[in-house]
Length: 390
Image 1 (cartoon, helix red, strand yellow):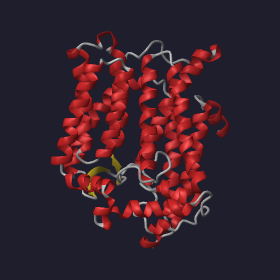
Image 2: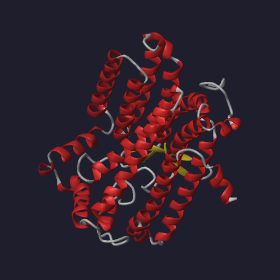
Image 3: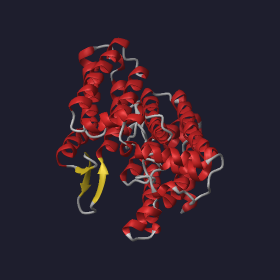
């Protein structure tokens, strides 16, 4: 059975290798990082490790099945996801679970598992933008037919996410702008979207429900010497982890700052990795994400269809920007955010949605392989740019 799974695993082999390496590293880091929280809750670290392992295995399974589906079907799926996403984001803001003064999670009935709706929104908006930009290439300069639907979807999702999770909203907005540039939207229209985003951003920061949190984090980053030490506690503990890790680190499982960092298994897992694996480990991890981006750029340039290229570009930019945003916060290059490190941080459904994104990218790569190998064309599902269901 395992041999059949490996045989049927198609797409860019290097991306598969990078995913396996990140997942393995994640298990080691999470096992080390959860020792303190396990002690406080009176349970063994193995309980958190097993739960994380289940999510990793589930993510790999989702990635495998996602990559088997012809990527062109995701065009039709994106419309369904957008119809679900916007009401779900509204529901989350009003009725979602409130953690750290932010309503980002909703609870799935029966299994009692929470998930962050912005993870679904990222996947929905990127696939929807890739589909819309592809379908409207002939009228891409038309304000009414192309620009307004595109701008509307970007701005609505941005504001709904930003009210509870500004960092994720900003990254998604940036990825959307990159897709608009690749999709040949005019400079004037892109500047209009940016202006609209700036107005919405200003409103969220100054008038939103988490305005005090956003302002205090910016002040703590810009003027760390003038703020209450409690507000810069996380970043200070992260810097200690970086400084004591040295070049080669303290070794796996030997972190000290995991006992002081509030979230060493998620938001600040990169600081723990540098403490245990040193500067070399931190560089290797960063290089894995850069290698992933490089392989995705190759997929984008080789894709014969606009939808595949836009899909791979949007998802790869999103994952890479998120990774480097997390690492930037850990090393003190940005204000504290709640952005996890893709496939490395401990998380529930975020790992699953991230894995689906990897699977879609591999589906595009798989299609390229089929077109380059005549023997593989016979198992092609559809012919054309986007299936009829789109």
